[in-house]
Each structure stands twice: as C-alpha cells, then as structure tokens.
Image (cartoon, rainbow, N blue to C red; front, top):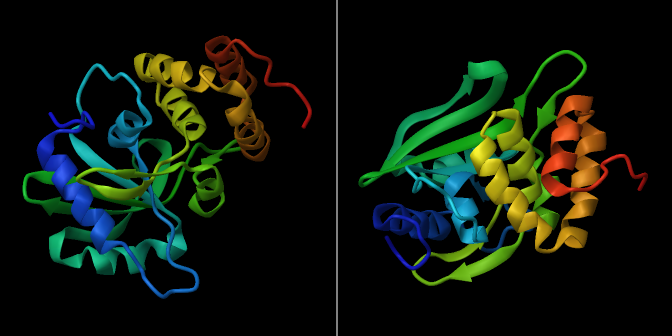
Length: 205
C-alpha cells in the first residue's frame, strides 16, 4: 500500500493516466472523473477491501478522444455494454498489472426512472486535488458515489460514503437534491438516503 491507500501498481497507473489525459491548449478539454474505490480512498473513505482496478468516467461525447490518449494500453476499444440493467460505452486497458476501465455515458435503470452520470455537470462539484506520486486528480463527487452504490446494493460501502458526507453536510446537499430531482429517484431509494444521512430529501430547493 502507498500513502494514498491505493495499491502501488494502481497508484503508478493513475499517475500515468493523469499525465496522458492532460490536454494542454484545448479550449474545452474532455472531462474525466476518477470514480470507484480509488476515488473513494482519495476522498478519505475507509473501505473494507482495497481497490482492484481504476474507474474513469466521462460523457459519451468525450469517450473516443480520451480513448485515443490511452490507446497504447488498450485491450478493447469503447464498446456498448448493457450488462446489469446498465448502459455505457466501455473500454478496457492494462497498465502493467493495473486494470483500467473508461466508462462513457453511464446510466442505469429503465421505465420512469433512470440514473445517469453527467460528467460535464458533476465536474463543478468535483474536488480537484494534487496527490504526491499521482498528480492533479478530479474526483467523482461523493454524493454520486452514494447514490450509485445504493442502486448497486453495496450497503457497507454506502455507510462509509455517508460518513464522509455527514462531515460537511451543507456542502453536499445542493448536488444531492439536484440528482434526486433530475433522475426522479424512486421513493424507497430516497427513504434509504434519508436514513443513511439522517435528513429529509423532500426539501424544496
């Protein structure tokens, strides 16, 4: 393990990703956010199991441009993935021993509700930090991570994420309410969020 808590092979790969995905001089560079267990560790979450891979999230429109920058590591190009009631344009890479996934346009659910990842919107809420040995990383907001893991039934991880949010609840509430409203989350999911965070999610904003 390293100081960040991320296994050394993954931390080294993440440093390469940060370097390769810098787009100097572009007026509107592609947006990417570090999510999953690596992102949560950098947020300061206490996880029961160390990360096994790196998850990079982006919007559909940026997927191929980001892929081109990681092309030399590619195992498979961006391909449509419909597994587990989810959709994404997903590419796989190996950097040494480290597995990396690029996930574009992720959404899950069907019918009246559907949870979607809008990286372009989420970046305004995403903390940007400079980590020794890695570089400048924009982290997926923890509110997204809480909803995502709740939808995937990862109760233990949800408890850890909720603990982070409750450290500074006021800073996270605007995004929480926005995601609930925009994605029309079902009542039982809102009830679980309320129980985890010890708040009401029915407040009008």
